[in-house]
Image (cartoon, rainbow, N blue to C red):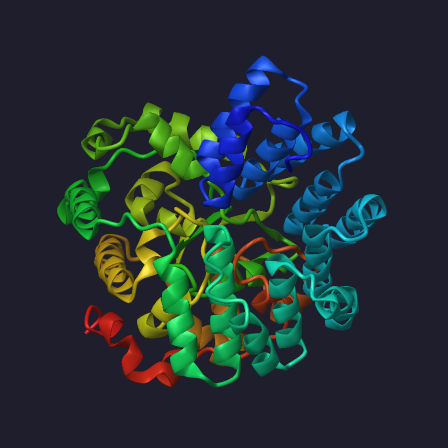
Amino acid sequence: MMAKQPDQRLVQAMQALASGNATDADSLCQAVLSDKRNDDLALALRAQALNALGRHDEAMRSINLAIAKNKKRADYFGLQADMLTTRGDFRKAIASYDKALKINPNHHGVLAGKANTWLRLNEPNKALSLLEPMMQSGKADTTILIAYAKTLMALDTPFDAAKCLLDRLPAENEPNETRRTLYFTLGKAMELAGEYQSAFEAYTEGNALSPFGFDVEDERKKYEQLKALYPANEMDTLPKANIDASNRVFIVGMLRSGSTLTEQIIDAHPDATGIGESEVLPTLINDVFSVGSIDAWKNLTEDGLTEIAGSYLNQTQSSNEEKIVVDKQLGNFQFVGLIKQLFPNAKVIHCTRNPMSMGLSCFAQKLPPYSNPWASSLESIGQFYAAYASLMSFWTTCFSDILEVPYEGLVQQQNEWTQTILDFCGLPHNEQCLRFWESGRTVLTLSQDQVAKPMYSDSLKRHERFGELLEPLHQYLS
């Protein structure tokens, strides 16, 4: 994005984006825009940062403004297309990629983005025909290479995918995020090829490049403070918001626990809708209670709780409030006690999974940088899981009406568990919930591929294939 001499702050923003620090990139772009509100490069870079931060509507507005200011930048149209793909508007994304390719037919990022969108549309042969000319030319950059490897995996040739990636590694001159993607993609290719030792080594290399700042003692201390706020013999005396919210369902748990699958099953019901991983409740809680002031929860009154609950409902209104509304922000497991005070009639579903399989799935997934610092080593995953499990055990002791949905049960007894979930939510039986993948709904989580197809059990015992390699995780779970 450096076709002209940019403001030095925008150079710094590019560097921040390359290292995965979208927050700093956004701040730098805003500083430039406060001086030059029509700077199209600042608008485009800010769009990229906002998209990485999950603020998709703002990101789209920003890139649209950048394009309005400068219609000759292929990378702007490519970024717009990337965002449309993120939103699930795949056909519109293809159209935007085509506009970019009219400006620059050989733009590597645009070609890779379009190929990835074809993969999302389950059209690997179209992705292959798009990428092969560039691969055969010998001029493919790493972006093209990664998309090509993913295409080969989609075409069931993981050995070929692994080979082309290995030829490019260690890629020490590439940006950190690109190298992370290379290693995690290689890990997946090796795992699909049955080379579990090599897959584990690739995942380890990818995680070694991930930002790390997890302190398990801080996490445990916070959870113990939360437990102290809810003495078992005082639960009935806690103040509660004067709000019904009986149509609200909160899904909580760990990453990779089947939460997206559970939400998709409920959302497939004509009388329900999912709002995804909403940040509204955590943001409201952080706005009301500054960091480290958990004790302030003790001073909550009925009026204060009602105000917070009302703000949440206003910000998460669905188009039809007669429907069941599902919020699957997993991190809300910390706030189950507060949820029970804010929404006394709401339902809480706790998604669980074999911790070894769940831990491996977290370790093998390229997560957004800075989002889950505990997920970059088996030891820290095990430590975090132990702290989380202890807190959830406490909540289930305090509140007997939390529904636990085990991933293994959901996959192996789909009919029975689907009905249990619907009954818990107060929904009548509906066959559409058993064919959740046919809903056409866009899912913007790590599990998007799984919920786009019928239930499958391939991942139930995934961890067993890695054997003793996962011992550092196992020691914290035994």
